[in-house]
Amino acid sequence: MPVVKHRSVEELPPPRRGDAGDPTYVAIVRALWTRTMLLTPPCAAPGVRRFRSISEAQQAREALEHERTQRLRAR
Image 1 (cartoon, helix red, strand yellow):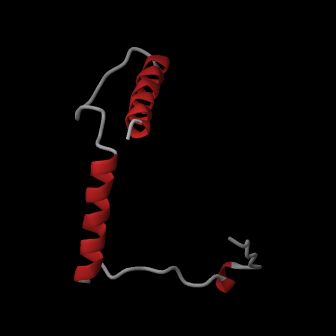
Image 2 (image 1 turned 90 degrees about the vertical axis):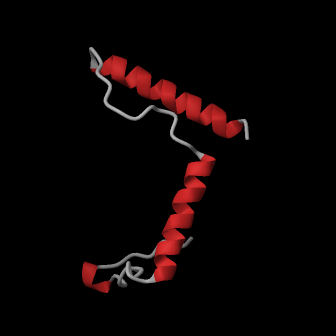
């Protein structure tokens, strides 16, 4: 992908946006969410967890990321 430089924001092309009211746009988003949930279901139980320290929270987050990575690699 080539890198394109612009001198100012005015030179930038407008972003591509979908119309949220368009039925095909809604179907595309729904299909994307469904595929994402099938490929990578949430590994953490819903709700709030309390930790005694930031390092304990970070360890729990890393453990969840490791578990999710292992599940993805097993596919």
